[in-house]
Each structure stands twice: as structure tokens, then as C-alpha cells.
Length: 478
Image (cartoon, rainbow, N blue to C red; front, top):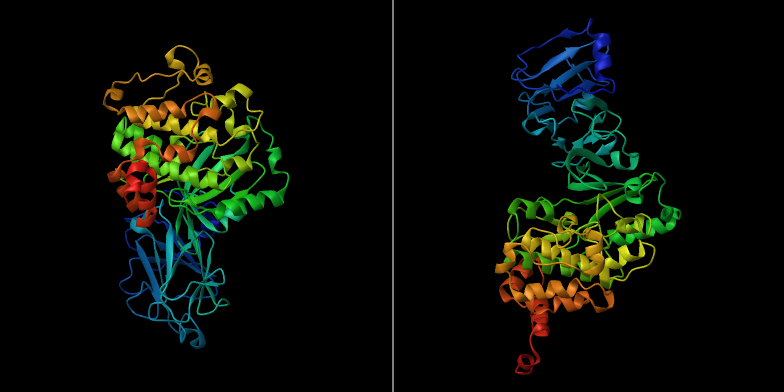
């Protein structure tokens, strides 16, 4: 059983010889938390309580080992507050049920919630929760009753501390939960805003992994510029672009707090399915293109489009898709995202490899990457690979690829034509994102209708787009 290492065990070992067990029941469930009395004396728990109280000469503690714990004046509470415990002045402001503390299924991997049931208020670290509102309770949080100065309890979280090594700007605001995944840059954790209880995904991007060395990026020398870039990214709003809620920039890492997408990433979806149907690939690709258009229209080139950076809202086949990591290149060295990360950069445009990542690139690098992603969706394979004879880098530089997999026999010629156009070595000859959105393969009324519903685009927007995509002869008849 995991134990808190920031004082709880030390206190227990020092005082175990003088602790007295007042109420004891078989501890069938894991003890996931502990409430220590602070400026309050408790004589006993409720008669129906499932908990035990332990006294020391100066204080007491209550082990939390059930899903929910309640405290207040009412006799049905686990902890009943009376005149023996509080002064009359304070007790008159205590509600029948003043607050409850919950941890789902006593699961140490779940956050702890405290709910305020009192009109006079329950306070955590001097901040009022608000009647019928909740917040997340973290280790060493102080709970006050009816007024910030009436500090009654200190909460100890006995689950493993997942926030070790993280900057204070993160740990003050967020509860750090389980790992969602990891990749070339670092790892992704599920986090909760302690005040709103909202879930987010926090991506921890190690700069030394990006730059290929231990030195921090020289692109971060101007704090004002960095903050400005962060502000721009946080203000981006599009149904197919992952919303950046917060960003903390440190010399060794960038901490991106992003909206949480439950469906995982596109790479894992492709791996689990082996490949995607042309219908599903088209729906996903269309949404990716809208995200890229939104970024390009605002002067942002993604520069690292790949299935790992495309997230799905749900586990359903037809689901909203969102592009992530669009702002990463603004917080690292200019060329670092383009360099080899873990092996050959299989989604990177040839002009990047040819120049060795030393020159500026146009938005056409995103078009190339979109072509590789579409190829992968339709076949479950990569167009360029070291397994195809020559090195993948040389294949990319020459634009040499083939439709080898048997799945291609069932793919339309229009889809292959679009891939051929996007995977042209000369960026000047590659289509723009607007050109891609106008291609014949995407003139699919059923797909557009699904996309409209998922993206919550107004019907007028879709109608205008469809009219724009139709041949001129059909437009003239209207």
C-alpha cells in the first residue's frame, strides 16, 4: 500500500507509542487518505461511521478507507461536530452536512474531491469552494469551516506523489494524475484543474530531446516573445484544433496543458484497426485539412504533422478529430522539430532533409506530411521506409514511393491522385491547403454531412463550400 512520504509516516512512527485507538473496525479497504485535526477536538465519530479515529495528546486523525466521508452537525455524518468539539459561535455556523470528501472506488489513481454543502462555506487553503460546488483536494491542503480562519483539518493524500519534479506553476494549479502515453518528446499525463475539476492532458516536452543535446533552445532567450506566442496559441479556437489551455515554459522543458481527448491518437487507432476504410480516412483527412487551413490562414505552419499528433474525441468510428502540437516549433530551436527524432523522420518533407534543417520552409511542408498521413490511414503502411531497399531519407528526397499493400486495390483512383499531388518533391508544385480542400476526392455529400455535424459547422458554411466545389456548369443553373 502506497504511503505519503512527506511527513505522515514520520509522524506515525514517532507517535505510535502514544496513539490510542478509540474506534476500530476491520480495515477491509485500502486507506487512501487521512484527516488530521487542526485547532479542533473530536470526541467520537458518528455511531454508524465506517471510519476510525486515532488520538494523540495534541490532535487526532481519521483514516479514510471508504468511498465517501461526511462531516457536519447531523447525526448521520461520519464525523459529528458538537459543542464538545467547537465553540458555540462556530458551531452555529456549521451545517447539518458541512462537507463531504470522495474518492471513487477508493482508487489511489483517482483524484479526491471535496464538496461544500454549507451556506457559510467550506474553505480549502483559505479559498471558498461555494455551496454545492466541488474542488480537488491535494496533499497537505487545509480545510476551514465557515470562515478561512477556522482551520479545522489537514488532508493527507496517501497515493503516490505524481507531481515530483514538476514546476510550482503546474503543481499549484493542477492535480497530476496517471500517464496517458509517451513519445519521442516526453510523456503525456492526465491532469485536473483543482478549482474547476476539469480534465486536461498535459504534454511534457523535454527540450534536450528536441534539440539533440542538453542545452536549452536559444530560441527562448526573449521571455516577452515566448509569452506572446503562448498567448496567440491559447487564443486559437477551431473545432479541429486542440485548444491549448495553459503553457509553462522552463529551461529544460515545455509543459502544455491541452484539452483532453478520450479517443487517443490517430496512430493507435490505425494500429488497432490495421488500416482505416476509405470512408473513415476521408472523414478524418477532411477534418485535418480544415485544421491546417485554420492554422495557415493565421500564419502558423504546423511542421510536425503525423498520426501521433492527431487526437480523437471518442472511440467511435465517426468522431471529431483535432490536430495537436501546432505550437511546439515556436518554443524550440527553429530546426529542431525537423531533425531526426527517433530514427528516420518519416513524415518530414524532402526540402527539410535536403537542406539539413538549416533553411526556412513554406507551408507546403504541411501538405507533404498530410499526404504521408493519408497514405498511412488508407493502407496501414508508410510510403517511405528503410525496409524498402534504400534509406527512407533518400526515398523522401526523390519522392520515390509505391502502392505496395494489397489494400490499395480497394482504394479509389481519386484518393491515389491526391496523394500523388501532395507527395511531389518540388514544394512549388505541391497544392496549397485550399487546393486540397477543393479536390474531387472530398466532393462527398455524405462525408461532408458527417463532418458538419461533428465539427458543428453551420449549414450555410457547408452549402457555400459545396457550391464552391461543384463544377461551374452546376453553379450557373442556380
